[in-house]
Image (cartoon, rainbow, N blue to C red; front, side):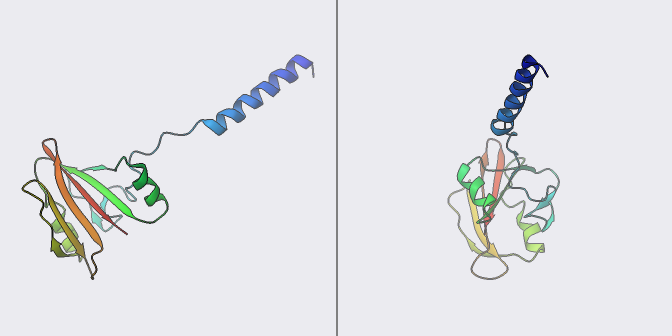
Length: 136
């Protein structure tokens, strides 16, 4: 093998090695949705018309990755703060405490047992509703 060919091969191997170490795939935009098409990681099918979303916070992302918490977000058309309450109730969750913070902020604690297992909050997202469900 000639020196030129060796240097070319070495340069190619080095470039590929650097690319493997530095090029990262784009983060999954829906990192918090464990089972797409379902609510609360497979608890029940997701009702039609809701768009899944995940918090952009690096803290949430790390807590979810570490298994310390779970967060799911959904956008509902218009103002529908309670649109996911019925599916959660059918799955056995009960309302443990209402926590209204104003006419356009709906929050409740829900669970199958006490203390509450999930925190459900709905706030405006432009003309729509952003619903966040979080818990351990």
